[in-house]
Image (cartoon, helix red, strand yellow):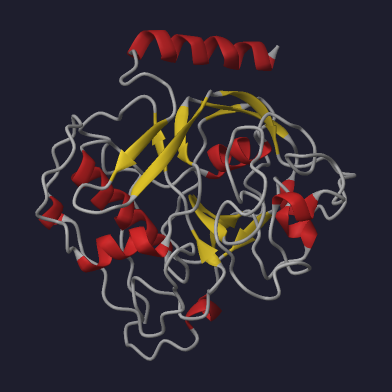
Amino acid sequence: MRSKLLIVLLTFFTIGFGQGDKFTVYTEPLVGSEFSIKMIPINGDTFKMGSPKREKGRKTDEGPQHDVMVDDFWMAEVEISWDIYELFLSRDNASEEKSKGSIELEIDGVSGATPPYLNYNKPSLPAVNLTQYAASQFCKWLTAKTGRYYRLPSEAEWEYACRGGEATAFSFGQSTRQLNDYGWHKGNSEGKLQRSKEKKPNPFGLYDMHGNAAEWVLDSYDSQAYIGRDKGVYNPVKNNRKLYPRVVRGGSFKDDSDRLRSASRGTSTPEWKKQDPQIPKSLWWHTDATHIGFRIVRPRQEPTKEDLFKMWVRPKKEY
């Protein structure tokens, strides 16, 4: 009954508010560069978020399982690469004419990143050791550059996309027997970040959702976030003022296989800035988080002008 109610609500929001561009695969060109971002349409629906009690490797913060409904959105086919993030960092192409989206936002009004104290990034590999704020500011810059709204995925959107329509521990099944075909982890990465798209995609056509770089989402971490959701929830996002901990998803090349499950939840920690000598510490870089990257989403229903800034992470200084 709850699932039917959520589906009815989804239908109402889809019809009641209308849609923008055709809901198909598209490539977002980064004008003034050779790079682009391929965006995959993800049809929203109701799904079971979290893991069942008997799932191997399950942690208590993954339950109880509950119904979640998410709206349609596009998600980047791969994690944002250093080549692309460096465009935001350098602003070399900031003066180029932007694409003709409907959002008017000045590129010069988006805060630019400071150079990293320790930079482990390499061309053609996913961008890493960024803070959640740094990832979100890239989304804001990309929005200003293209006129289309981009942000980090919510934790619910990320898990829904990772599952690819499957209810099993991984998008490809219940056991780890096929994991080497789909993801980079501690057992096969040789301790190194790898290029994107070297493994098979999930059923939605998304690469590296299991492993390689763990990925930032919008949510603050709460070990009891799922408690009280027994009636189902619609597009949930957990957000509080504390800087730590916040959620990363997907596991990484440093992690054991159980941390790559679709429902597994990772958390940020101040230890990720252990080598940062700045006071206050950088808003932009986690000197010791060489396993943390991000990918972006674009909701099919564009937010109102009033809501435009709500899903971009605000800065918070560290002392």
